[in-house]
Image (tube, rainbow, N blue to C red):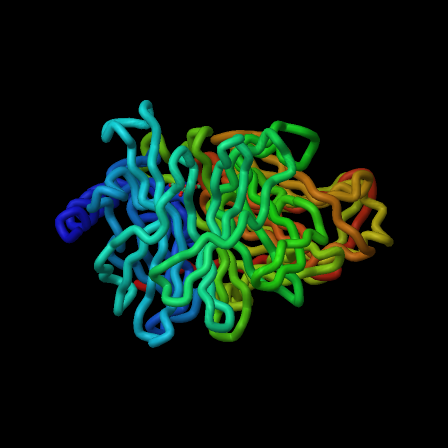
Length: 491
Ligand code: FRU
C-alpha cells in the first residue's frame, strides 16, 4: 500500500497549495484538500483521539475512497496525520469504504474494520458492485498492515457495507447495513470471539418503510440503560418533515441483550434537524462518554467549494450523546470546545424593543453565540441572529419562532449554495441556544442538545458581522455572549 499512500499524499499537498480558504473551516475537521465524507474509525488509541474519514485525495468529488486521518490529545487541537488507508488489494480496489476501529485486548493494537468496494467490471458500477467487510491492524494508528476479508457477502447481496464493531463481555459484535434480496433496508449483526472469524447472528433490524432499500452507516451502542440504533436510510420518500432530507440520519431506541431481538421502544426520529448531517459515528471515550461526529456535506447537491476552492466536506464538532426526556438522543458539543474560546464579548441582559435589531459585532470570524431567554414571558414573535452577515445583506438566520414553538435555521438569505429553512419544536419555558458559526457551516444546539440543526452555509464576500433582532414584540435576553473561536489545527 506504500506507493498508493505516497501518491495520495502528494495529491493532497499539491491541492492544498492552491486551496481557497474563504469558506474553509476554522474549527471543523476537513481535508487539507480534496473531498471528504463519513467519519470513520473513531477511537482513543495510543493516548490520542483518532479520527479517520472517507477521503478522495485526487479531487473534490467522491471517488475511489481512502481513509484520511487526524488525531488529538484533547479533542480541541488536532494534528494532521498521513493518509491511513488506500485501495491496494483486489477486494478494495475501488474504494476503502466506511468502517470503525476498536482497540484489541492487548491494548497495543488498533484493529479497523471497513468495507472493501469493488466494481465488478473494474471500470464503473454498470455491471454491479461487490462489497465485503475487511480488517487491518496498526501499532501506532498511522501505519496499517495485512488487509484481509473477514465477512463475505452472500451471493446476490450487493449493498453490504459500513461495519461498526464493539466488544461486550468476551464477545465482539459487528453491525453493518445491507439490502435484502427483496430490496429492504436492514442491519445485520455478526459475532466473533477472536476478532477474525465472524458468524452471522441475526438481522437485528429492518426498516419498516418498504421504500427504504439500504441502511448506511449503522451504529449501535448502549446509552443510559437502553440501546440506540442509528442509521442512514436510503430511499425514504419525502413525507412531511421527517425524511425530507436528501441525506437522512436518524435513530431508533430499544432494549437488547446478546442473543435476543432488538425490541423498539422509540420509533425512528432524525438525529439532527438541519440540512447536512449524515453518516454519524460514535465511540466511547476513556471516561465513558459517548461521543459522535457526523459529516456535513452531500452527494447529490454540489457544494460551492467543490467548484474552485479545492476542498469539499467537513465533520461536525464532536458531540456528547445522552438520552434525554422521551428517549431523545441528545447531542451537546463536548465541553472541551470551551478551550477554543479566544475572546468573549458579553452583552449582559440585552433588551430589544418591538421590531428592533442591533449589530453585535462586525468584522468578526468564526464564533460561538450563547443566548438564554425566558420564552414564557417574551412578547416577541420571533427572535433571531443574522450570522455571517455581509455588507450586501446576505446572512444565515437562526433563532426561535414563538408562534410555531420552533427553533429554525433559515438559509433563504445565505449567499451561496442551497437555500431552505429547517426547524424543530422545542418544549419548556426557557430557550437556551448555542450557535457555532464557522466559515462554511452553522450548527445550532437548543435546550442542552435536545434539538440540533447542522447545515453548510456559505457566506458572501467581505467582512462578516452578527446581528440580533426581535419582531412583533420586545425581548430581554438573560444571557447573551459571543465567543471568538480559535483554529483547531496545531501550529
Ligand atoms: C455513506 C457512504 C457509505 C460508504 C461510504 C463511501 O456516506 O455511502 O455507505 O461506505 O459513504 O464513501
